[in-house]
Image (tube, rainbow, N blue to C red; front, side, top):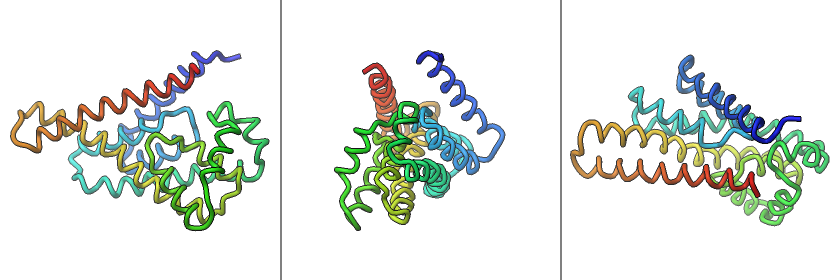
Length: 221
């Protein structure tokens, strides 16, 4: 039997290996492939791939506006991965949650809570898009939950793409601004823009530290 510590170490090593792929492919392909795998392999922390992609984009001299393109590319990859999870949960329902929920970090209570939050029609579309866009919301809970409660495929796909674009842009910007802040320090503070970049860099570190603490606190509880 694999202990939790060994389980965590295995996925940490897999995550590191995934990030190392950035050296052998373009930032576009890394964003697409990484987002797909990150959705299917739930233990991979959500910020890792997209913040890495943002950092790569900044280090390779991409302009800020290109983050919108990478957000869309990542959304396509993540949606394809999410469709696999959605399809399995849709077909098997509670059996899927009972069998694989502990691996995916999803419980029946998570699904019940999601069902209670969702309305119908456009309200459901808006709710799912909003939840998917939140950086602190578990994407896996949404994918499994939507399949288990049988949200329509159209609503699921549209809300996943739209919400993920927003979520991806946030993480890409975190990585991109972190590199920009570092460059500002190296080159010297020259104007208000540099000061803003430094402030963003500090906020990025605080936010990522909070996500790390929240994730590990959840495992211990």
